[in-house]
Length: 383
Image (cartoon, rainbow, N blue to C red; front, side, top):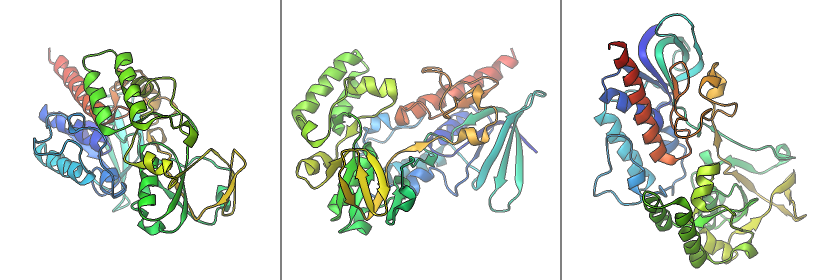
């Protein structure tokens, strides 16, 4: 059994940021990561055309801003390069191919968190004893595919967005995209650009903005009430995109910022999808009723054959699968038990980072808060 002050589970941006800040405070820590690299979602499981939709001001990790030469809106490759430099600068050294299978709290001793991780390379089980445990496996750890009646009968290709790379492989095919968040909208756009015939399921109202609107809104949020910012963003959206109800897209009653903070629902940041919907190059369809072979029936009674389905239906946290005492920090869905702003802090020295649904800015704030709280607890022992 190896003893350490802090064990961090996950080497995505959340784990990297936490480890970096702890290193900055000279607090020993170990990062356990099941993949063979850090930031595997960004390096391996992102589609080719992915760009960060938020300005670089809101996409940095603690202690290291983006350079002045970095574009305002970064490509995936640019952000990965930033992560490479970040890991090197703060000497973050994850232990790869460690699949955490169990973590639990022992009642006796100072280092009373136990973590069991299987070394995927050797098959051996490693046991760690830590005073503090940080859940940094993120809300994007496991791809979520919803239950759909008859999905098991579908004869075409089924892909989750985490495995989607490019629309090139779908040229000339009828493809149904399930999920109308930013990934779903951008994948539908990418499919159309490569000569596929995409349709996208839109079940509920959503806000559509562009990157510049979001940037203005986030800057304004520092100085103005949310309702003022929402009123302006909604007005700008109406001017830019008009009434989209005829195409199956309706605006929610709550404003884009209020909806984001109240329900964690991010506005769609348009990359050109709306113009393709208006031009008929991307079809909007309602919720799926059932699937029978290659034929999909929708709630409006329309039936159509498809060659492939892309599920852009998000991810779910997997922490509850291995954290036996999850209720100390998480709810039954694997999300923070406590509300913002103390969502990151659990009981018995367990924390979570990157589950606030506030993007990379939220990751950065969580990591800093957790590291400082750990530092304070350690310092108070010697007073």
